[in-house]
Length: 74
Image (cartoon, rainbow, N blue to C red):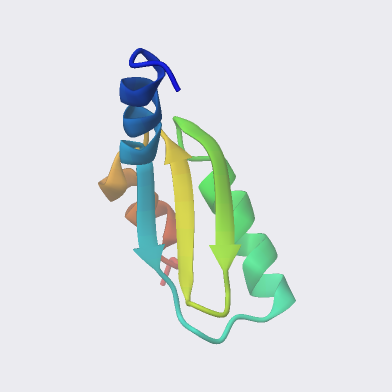
């Protein structure tokens, strides 16, 4: 591995935002979470990990915007 590629890999790792979710999500809820996360500006990719109760988002994403997208309207 060259020295130039290491900082790039570190930068990519730093662009991951992890947000907790309720541990019990049905398939419909996972689809809803996925739709909302996909609409947040800067999202390059994401993974909903139901078993661990988290969503991991890769990209230049504002954590507050991501949390706001996941809040259910009252």
